[in-house]
Image (tube, rainbow, N blue to C red):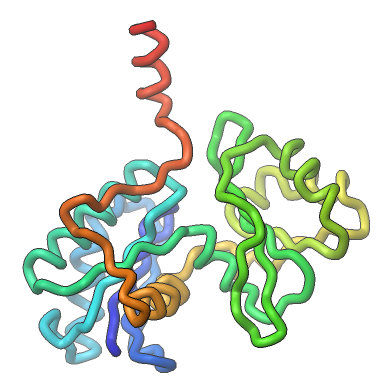
Length: 234
């Protein structure tokens, strides 16, 4: 089964092509250009270099969030357009799930944190089973760093943080957790389209394709514009 994964939940844009256990191609850009400027040229380049047509794909995978509201909308719109054009099934994968997979094999708890602004982070908790499978052990949340510490207080063992929230809140979290806490190498802080594609491929194999017409990003919380609108209209 050959699938294309598209990652646009953060400032990083990524597209990957995988086939079962093989990575065929991956393109990553972390530049000032917007996703609307980057994604289609990246896609065209990847397919050309891999000598693959959209018709050759068995499915499409997109990051469903949480993350940048604009980035998620652009990614969803791109995948919906491709899916309608080539009539391929679509799987949606959480940004936090694919980010946690960066640390495959790491013992203890994995805690991906994405900077959600307003002194909050998007977060969940994961661990790897003895068989090497990723297992989520907390809901997806938008909470303060202090609430992250409180969440971890009832869970023993080491915790490894990764994601773009580490640069903002990593020091606070390490000081609060003491010897329990550690941060992953900065190389692991970027969401990878390859991981997204792997997880999506497994969902498609299980028949968990999404209804394309109702695809929506998973924001976790309302945007700042929505909050202000509600405040004005109370």
